[in-house]
Image: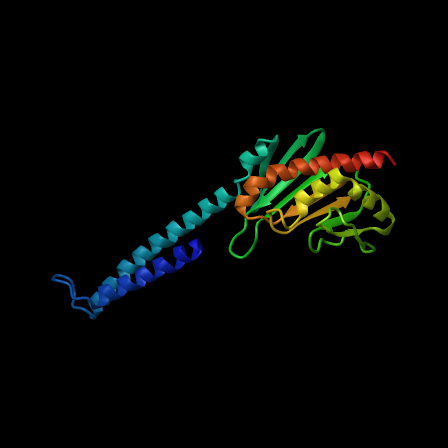
Length: 239
């Protein structure tokens, strides 16, 4: 709605101003209405105002992009993560939480494109799998789908390498792990489309929240991801 207002309304106002300058009678020394002189005057005035509008709109867009790309700076700084610059529109973060190296990134949404929040924790997970509430990306060509009722009212989509299925099922059967996954992934929780990806040496989390939800939940998501990584690593070491 704000985008429509900033683009459509000023253009309509400039058009109306141009019509007024052309057709409305004005006292001397202004040229006669609808004459060549009046047309030239209208074109000059509307052109100058249009140029000012374009410059102002460009400045506003640059400021909005700069601000929206940094909305998570304070949130992630509060849990010990540091902004490490930008890659295009992507704002990157890194830190070490509870002994684990953590990286995250934030890309604000524009128009119909949703925002994206990514986080990964380096840990000896020892599994290749993907878990999501809908359709997570396939983690490997031979991954199979297994049905794992994690909680009484929640059964996520689980894709896993066949020889890792038993270990992952045992891990998800633990109540603490199940509740952590539910908080990260369940559609009943705010945060848009989300999924968890497991690789032998790290765990990934991807979400497409709006900015308001990201500010509210990003810190909690990262902390929960670190806890899950520690649980997975402990389960791998206990084999």
